[in-house]
Length: 216
Ligand code: GRF
Image 1 (tube, helix red, strand yellow):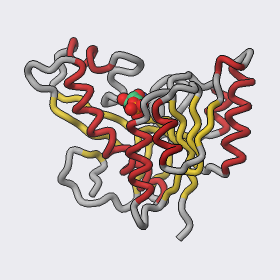
Image 2 (cartoon, rainbow, N blue to C red):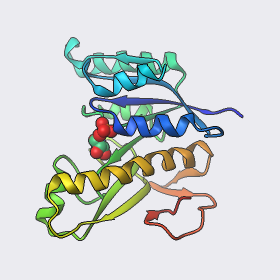
Image 3 (cartoon, rainbow, N blue to C red):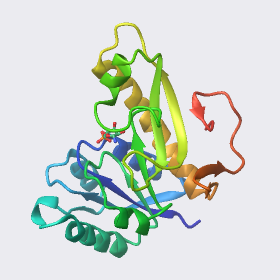
């Protein structure tokens, strides 16, 4: 079985990276991580990747005079790795429209809200301030606008009385760790296509979870 070659781009602790690593280490999982790329040398995720024997590299944005040069260096690494899909997992630099276009429909992101609500930072506090009863996470294809693009998969969690931003973040993060590998599986199995900026999932599994489309 040929597995989809995936690069994961991070900036920080890398818990979603770890969820993807765990999924990819399961026998029969249809994707493999060929590169972990960080824009900061002290990203915690780098250590996890290296401990697991993955190729993990730093392209420090501070070392480059401008964003196009920084991105060209990252792209050279991506190309060298043979990555067919790039997963942003807590990657905290905005990418230029040129980069995003070159990876169109091959670049995905996870965001800790039910998009299109609460794009940007500080999502959990804003969800609490708005009095929402349900929050969650979204895996989507990346477009030039921040936290925009065709939605692949979402997972919902309740907002509970007494939640603060940390409590809600932890509940959403647990959902992220299930949602991102599930979305990667759907893509790697060739079941996801973009049709006029909407995602169509072929033969979605049976309903019955808080995931949409449902996942086993
Ligand atoms: C996650 O909440 C993700 O949704 C957001 O950044 C955070 C990254 O966390 N884009 P981690 O580095 O994966 O632990």
